[in-house]
Structure formats: C-alpha cells, structure tokens
Length: 427
Image 1 (cartoon, rainbow, N blue to C red):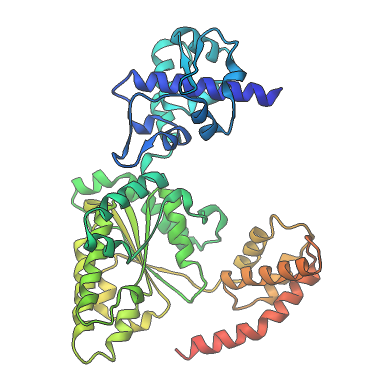
Image 2 (image 1 turned 90 degrees about the vertical axis):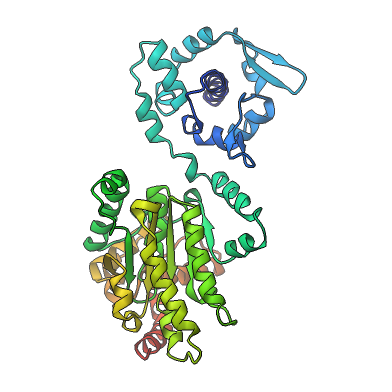
C-alpha cells in the first residue's frame, strides 16, 4: 500500500511540475528535477520544450510506473485522453492543495518548480533558491553533454577528429567520489580551495586574479591522481575531459601540434569543465629522440595552450598528471599554480583504504595487520589485492571473505609488486 501511495505522489508531482513549468516562462530547465528534465530533454535544441506533456509512457520512463492512470483515476483533478494516453491536470489549485496535504514537504523542498509555486501561493515554508541549489544543474546531465557533443560533431570532419582525441564523461557517470577516497591533508586542502575558486569565480575575475586553476598532480602510478581528478568532476558538477598525451601524438610530423590545439579548443567549447591531461611527461620524454623539431614545436604549443586557458576566464580547470616529474623542465613547472603531491600511502592511510574497500564485504578483518603487511603498496595495489581475494572466494563458491583470504592475496601479490617496484625505480 505504501508503494502505491508513493507512486500516486510521484505522478501528481509530475503533473504539477509540468503545469507550473508550462505556465511560467521565467522558469528554466534547472527548475526541473533531473529525472524529469532528462526525460523531456530535446537533444537537438539543447533545452526542454514547452509544453511538457504527461503521458503514461512518460510516467513509466521517469518513475518506472506502468499504467499510471489506473493509480490516480479517482482523484478529482485529473482526466485522461485516450489519444496518446495523455494524463491531464484539470484544476491546479485543487491539485496543489491536495498535494500539500499529503506527506509531500520533502518533495516540494527538492523540486524547484513546486517550490516556486508554493512559495507564492501557499503558507508552506519553502525556499525556491534553496530548491534550485539541491538539484544538480543541466550541465551535469549526460544528455546535456551528449547534445553538445552532437552539435560539435555536426560541424564537419575536423570537429569529429577533435572529439576523437578525448574521452568525455558527464559528472553523473563518474564512479569516483571524494568521500570514498583516502586523501592526504594537502590534497584535501587543495580540493577545498578549488571548490571555493569555482564558487567565487566572478570575484576572482573582478580582482583580476587569473593565475588559479592549473594543478599538476605528481606521484607514482596508482596513488590516486586520476581518481581524485574524476572525483572532482562529480563534486563540482563539471564535465570531465580526459586526454593522454600519447593519444594525441601523431606519427605524422606536425599533426601533434594541431592535435594539442584542438584539445584545448574543445575544452573551451565544453566549459565549464575539467581538462585532465595524463602522461604529462610524455612529450618531454619523446622530445629526447626528436630529430626534426616537431616535438619541440608540440611542447611549445602545449605550453602556450596552458598559458592561454583559464579557470577564471574560460571556465576550464586544468589538471596535469605525471608519474615522472624529473622529466619535466622548468618551463612546464612554471605553468601550474599548484603542485599537488600524491605519495605512497602510509600505514594509517592503508588501514583507512582497506576499511573503505572492505565496507561492503561480509567478513571480519584486521585492517591494521593488512596495512602493516602492505608497506609501499599504492591504493590501486590494495584494490587489486581485494580483487584477487574476492575472485578466489568466488572460485570456491563463497561470497564471504576471511582474514586468511586477504593475507593469502597479499602474499600472492608480493611477487608482482616487487617486479613492478623494480621497474619503476629503474625509469
């Protein structure tokens, strides 16, 4: 019974939201809760068209409720149009009063369109601006990102080639989140500063402080550089553009320089966004064997492109990452306003990482002992150890783990770990 009551509220909320949105031109797409906005998104026009029409198919797509009319047909403020299986709201005031008398306050507070209406027509204590803030904006939706990409791709072959150089993720598709990562205090501080910089971007522009928003993440492989960059995408609600310099280095001399320019041009088109450049040392590494000056020109183009992009002006947060900082020269270092170190996790961090990655695993574990056994391991190594233990347990038809399983996985991992460390130290 509770499920059907909740589903009835879902459908009436959609009807009210559509009616209010349709009748108020001052409302925009960010006044629609994301599930509703995403369903009605016009990819070609990059907007939600008016009027929003509520059909049984729409109710099913938004809420997973088939045959929604059967649930609400006894309500006195709705009607049904057989043609198109359309559900209509016939009396707004009556529907709004009925909805307010249900257990619906939390719904109103997180639905900007409803908050807009009730803050003007009812005594309900609701803050419209707050309701907008608790919903992520349309720029976080994969539909927004895909429609913008489609628009760029439609500009011709060169635009399509530009899109092939990067991997683009919408914030809602990013799996990593900051609360699931174990960070050093320095990393936490820098994340918080960047969050503030984006919050106060207009102020920074006003005082002409432009040298903000270019970070270089430095540390061994597996220490979380990419994970933190991606988690920032989710935290800040910004599209994530990932490029590896090895991907944009062409075998044809001269093409590398053009590719670098294309990547930065794309970031500006997709702003606000995060541009994450992995393998930042790749060009410098390749330059050592360059006989034709092409790589030197590419390096100069890369440095110039970094100079010409700005978080404050262009809305692009630039993050470079390198496993081999010694290969970078002073000209590259100077382009970044902050160097963030990603060291190997100490015993305290390793214990915390084990606690996080084992949180959903059935079993009793001594995470301190596991931390002590995994000196010099990265966070990525610890996840590989868990992977090994889980797969071995599944092989034995078990879904629970024991301390012995994990200790055995640590032991089996040690040979691979020693080989990896010896190779890294010889680079």
